[in-house]
Image 1 (cartoon, helix red, strand yellow):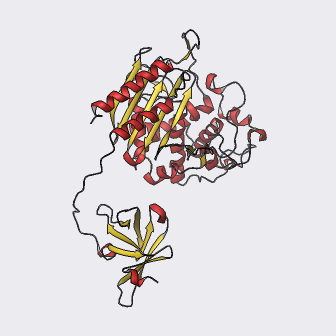
Image 2 (image 1 turned 45 degrees about the vertical axis):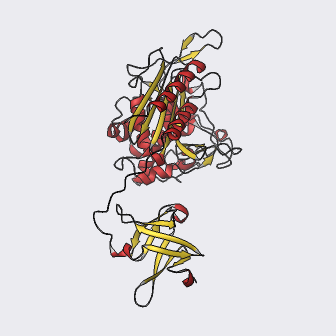
Length: 439
């Protein structure tokens, strides 16, 4: 599988132009579809990039920390509305919840005290916690969006407290090894791109330090490659249920806070950034550490993603590495819309409990159509021509909404004295077989 030549050329031109105008020593962009890398585009020669060259992920590390937290939630070892105090007792910010920390909605200060943590050797968790003061809360929770690296250092401490395992050892055990991310590491591992600041006037390079962030590592420590980050993008598009329940990842993509109230183009879920581009919503995260910038964006409905790396801190002339990934992804989706899955005949007929509910129903003069999903046994449908609703069986004559406007609502089957299904009560809205039978 690969992109069409014309699409690949547009991505290559975009990458070449961005590298030249943005003055990046090296730049790489990858495109992923249906779990498979379909194109890698590179530019620059300091060093010459390829899919196995490591760059620093920066805050894309937060997406992995967030998945670790959700794994522990699903295992029943913590709850998202637990106060921080329950797991890291004695801090003056202990009333903040894990949900607020994950979604940058707690009002917590952006950085820990002391020298800029991204450019200096980090302290241990005890030192990080000891530096907390009541003044670290900039404003009350849910007053607004306030990005906090400090929050993710504390979430790493929560994970260690809950599991008894240091953050990176837990990450390696629960994510990197199961997903085959063999070139995603705590420290840089050759071959890797050195990171630079480009002088604004004479274009010389100043190499930046590659520090151990210590207790702040869960916020931005990791190193990875285009190949590994493509695998992680594929996971965010369609997770392996053995690693994380698909429904949990969908929950992570629900907005906790909108980060630009003027335009509503971006928000934050549970460790996942959200970006609106036209009529599409992408999920992912940007990342930066001294000498490095990175981007990851995923369009989950089409299982298409783009990733980007550069080894310079910041991009010139208005270029932004996360914006580059979004632009590349949009180019691909516009030029090559995802094909619908092939229709396949059912291998077995549906059971009677769903068969008797199929066909046309009416509500408020609007005609609905329902049919069984042969792959799952669910009942799917909606207004004729708009099959936006899905219901899963939950007991005799009881179905639970799983999509659309009826998500979470109950569909109850109403029967007459002879036991025939004559109406559907969906959250008190009664659907009948004929518009003349409407109550």
